[in-house]
Amino acid sequence: MISISPLLKKIIARSPIEEPELTTARESLPNDSVDLQPRHCLLIGLLKAHGYSLNASESRMLDDMLDDEEQVASDGMPAVSIASLLKLLIHKGRVLPDSIAVAVAFIFDNKLSTSQCALLLGLLAYTGYDKDPQVLAKTGRTMRAAADQIDRQELRTAVGKASHAFGRYEGGLCDIVGTGGDGHSTFNVSTTASIVASSILLLSKHGNRASSSTSGSADLLQAIQPKAPIIEAVTAQTLPKLYGKSSYAFLFAPIFHPGMGFVGKIRKDLGIRTIFNVLGPLANPAEGQIEARIVGIAEQRMGPIFAEALSLTGAEKVMVVCGAENLDEISCAGKTNCWNVVDGKASPKIETFELEPADFGLCTHPISDVAGGKSPSENAKILVDLLENKLNANHPILDFVLLNTAALLAVSGACEDPMEVPQDGYSDVVIKERGPGGQRWKEGVRLARKAVESGKALDSLSKYIEATHSLQMR
Image (cartoon, rainbow, N blue to C red; front, side, top):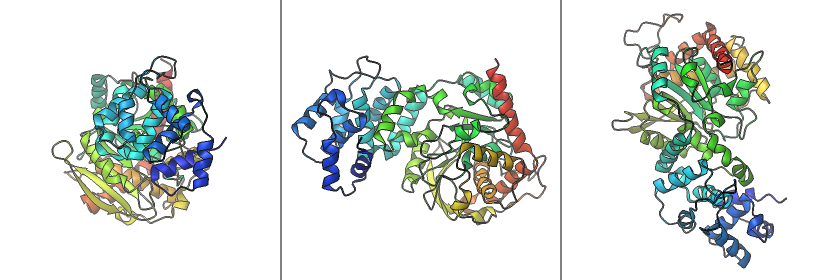
C-alpha cells in the first residue's frame, strides 16, 4: 500500500511537491467512491483546494463526498451533511467558528460520514482554522459538552471539602498538560510533576495513552509497580468520591470522551496532525473547577494562539509554555517562552516572558539527558525512584520535574503566603525572590523538592492508587 500521508502533510504545509510523488499518489486512488479510504478522500479534497485540476474520476468522487443525500455514518445510519461548510473550506470562503464547532460536535455523535469527517479534519488544517483561537475555544467547549458529564454540584462540594487553600491558592483543581507531538520523546515530566504537585494542590490531570511518543501519561500510570492505579475506575460518576480519598485524579480521556472513539480510525488512516492533537488541554471535563494550569505546546507560533483560546474560555491562572527547542514543557536545556493570561475573566491580557533553569535556581541539562526510558515500565520505575527520593539531588530528570512542578505551584498562587509562614513539613526558609513574570519560581522549587524529600509526593500517589482500587470495588 502506498503511503500518501507525507504528501498530505506537504500540501497542508504548502511545501514544494515533486510531480512524480503527486502522480504516484493520484494513481493509487480507487476508481469508485465506495472504495475510498479517509486518506483518499482528503487527498482529493486537498487537490481541489490547492488549485489542481481534478480528472473525471476524482471530480465524480468529490461530488459523491459532497452529496447531501448520499452520506452514511459508520454505523450505517443516515449521516448529517456538512457539504456547505466543506465547500467553503475548499474554496477558501469565510467560515464562522460556531459553524466549525457545530460540525465537530457531529463527530462526537457519530453523525458524519467517514468521507466528510476526513475532509473536515484535513481542510481545517489546510486552511489554518485549527489554529484560530476562537475555533479552538469553541471546539474545546463542544468537546467538553459531548463528554460524560460530571455532577457539578457534587464536584464543587467534594473540592470544597478536600481543599487546603493557602497563599493565593484558593483550593481549586489544577492541571499540567502538554499537547504532545514535540518529537523529543522526553520522560513523562508533566505527569510526574502533577503527582508531586498533588501533595500541595488538588490535581485533575487530563491525559491519554501515547500518540506519537512511546509512553503517554496513561501508559506510565498503568506500568507502576508493584501496584498500578485502575485509571478506568475514575469516571464522571466517581470523580467527586475520589477527592474524598485522594488529592490526585487522572481523568483518562477515553473514559470521559467516548465520542472520540468514532474518529480514531479516521485519524490513524489520515496520518496527519489534526485539531484533535491540540484540543486535549482545552477539554478537561472538570473545567468549571479548574483554578490553575500549565499548558505546554510544541510550536512557538501556537503560544499566543493557545493563550488567547484559554482566555476566551474564561480561564484564569494559566501559563502556556514552549521550550526553545519546541518542547511542550518548561525546558531544562535553556530558554522557555511563556504566555501568561492575566486577569482572566475580567479583562484578560497576555503577558510574555522567558524562563530558564537559573530562574528556578537549577542547572541546565541537555534534552538528551531527560529522555527517560524506552518503555512505560522503564519510565514508571524512574517515577517511583524519584518519589522514593532515590535520585541524586541534581539528577537531570529530578531537576526537569522540579522545574515544571514549581511552575504550577507558582501559577496557582501556592508560593504566595501573605504571612510568610511556611507550610507544615517544609523548610522555614521561604524564598521571597521573584523572577520573570513576577513569580516566586525558586520558592516553587523549594516546595516541590520538600514534597519529594518528605515522602509527601509518594504518599499522594499511594493514596490515589488505593482510592482507584476502592472505587473499582464498589
